[in-house]
Length: 135
View (cartoon, rainbow, N blue to C red):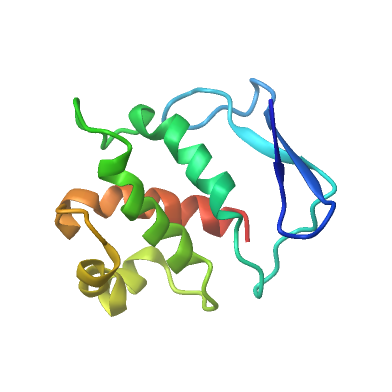
């Protein structure tokens, strides 16, 4: 279990495994959830980037799109792009957002990543889906 500081002063958040009865549908590993005094996110609130990065750093090798030998750094920009895009207002599905701006925006968002949109699409979708569940 780890403790992180939430952006709100004094609001500690704990990350704990969920009960085994609620495993991740892809990996069948226990999911993690936040407990503590942090307020729920609203449309104007962003997810905590540190918590999201930590989650993906621990879990990226368990995902079905993971390619043997790739490092977290190969996926990090895609995860950030996914959760940041999903946190924006609007009710587009991933597919709608992909057609509207995600695919074409990857070149600018990818930073130092050399991955094409096709290579990181599913990682971006994964982070998008997780972020939308927590909105």
